[in-house]
Image 1 (spheres, one colour):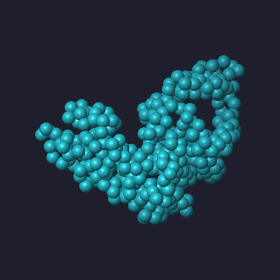
Image 2 (cartoon, helix red, strand yellow):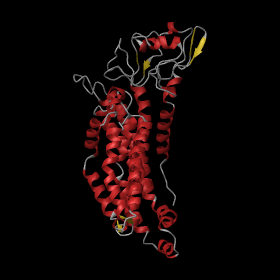
Image 3 (spheres, rainbow, N blue to C red):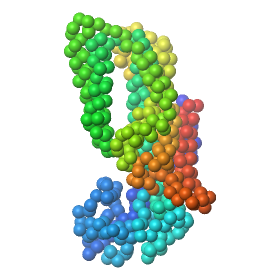
Length: 411
């Protein structure tokens, strides 16, 4: 079955991908290439590989970095042997001048205090003088990371739980009594060691280590349950009502507004308030799995009753092989639809959180939602239309493109 996706959708997503990948080449407040004392440096390109706030190892660049007016210093031609090469948008996402704060600068206005006319805010500035064009470019990366990675996490969780519920149901998955008792007892310990003992942090490695700690503790309790199952009473196999457990859990997750839960967790868990897009993405993914699980469950309930699955079971194939070779591949189409719509929802959710101020100062001027924060309550929104029109248009185009893909897959 062919899928007809409108061509403008590819142009929109392609443009977003281009902005996300080449963000540091398109919007950068540091020179991409410069010469100091006859030596060529590439200070702007370093931000593609490491944290831009990390001290430079080269003394001439470190001296500029340590200046109190770093914003102007990187753009002052007297600090270089010859005029440096700047990005098309010569301002980094989130940076602003502490000397000349161009609050709500009109689109096309040159930055005051800078000698060259190339330092123009093409889409204007926000309430703190941050460049809107740089935020638009940076927000594309945040939106794609949040939408794609959050739904990958949701897909992994939902696919696992939906498969257990739809294929095995309430009476087909038999587990020894000792195993499920020990695993049930291990859940609070795994949560305690993951969240309390092993502190969360905002880096991808820290999140992966936390997940590894959780599953490591659960694996230890699972092994203990296997050993305990040698005893007669604990060796009795019982059918686990996985369908009932998964669906009741999904109902609990669905009944609680995700935005409220994420706001509470954002306050409770350290890291998100410090500007961790990775932790925000992980939290959005954890609370977005219910739709995927319900789609997979419903499709597997239909597929497992078909003749070819019954025939595969009659031939003596193991349940795992019947699932992976025959049932699950024919139940994946609804998952793709849920992925597209879920990614659009994740982009909106990230914009909500940024608008509410989560992520702190590190997110200001970096994500689209942060531009909607108006710290100058006396300013008329109609007079500062560019601060809301441009990010709002980007959010609208991104969400519409993802929803169009979901609709095309569902036809």
